[in-house]
Image (tube, rainbow, N blue to C red; front, side):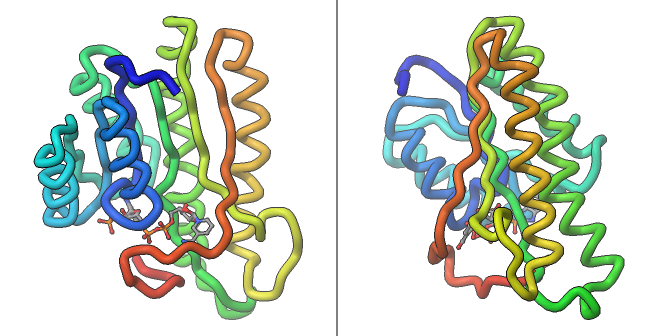
Length: 199
Ligand SMILES: NC(=O)c1ccc[n+]([C@@H]2O[C@H](COP(=O)([O-])OP(=O)(O)OC[C@H]3O[C@@H](n4cnc5c(N)ncnc54)[C@H](OP(=O)(O)O)[C@@H]3O)[C@@H](O)[C@H]2O)c1
């Protein structure tokens, strides 16, 4: 991975996997911009990275629709001096449970954060990367996106959408030098918060 003056936008970079990624990229010399709703958690993440000699900023946002995603992209581009080189679509919620127990609100929230926000972040940022001729998008998926398991209808299907979008975006922006990949972690301990519907 390049360690030049790149800028990385990491949604959900204030906790769990996203926070670990933010720390790692910052240690490589990359300017990291982390996104989350909780300002205290965001400022703590940024302070720790800066104390270790890294460059970090926090954008507070409830990513739930196209306009919040576009606003995050706009502010990240501003903080990145005109470009975000790396987009990590990490923020996600995982509502587990049988289909008949899922509410419309849970459906809307899961698809808003897990699918709609990444979709419009890519729509804003990938064309800028393509224009520069390089960039990277990494989408956080899950192994349950690939097989049917009880209780995974909402979470698994939202991440299955991300798997397909990863392939589409690779086809759309890859020829212009933008790498698009998905990673599918196994069960990973986060910040001590229980897995589930945490909105
Ligand atoms: N942990 C696992 O075992 C596992 C396994 C496979 C895949 N994954 C995937 O990996 C990703 C990270 O999982 P994790 O367990 O590390 O997550 P986590 O610890 O629960 O952290 C979620 C992050 O997303 C942010 N977030 C949540 N809702 C948001 C919203 N509406 N707008 C903006 N930010 C929001 C949270 O910050 P705020 O609360 O401050 O908003 C937090 O920084 C997810 O996409 C998940 O599906 C996780």
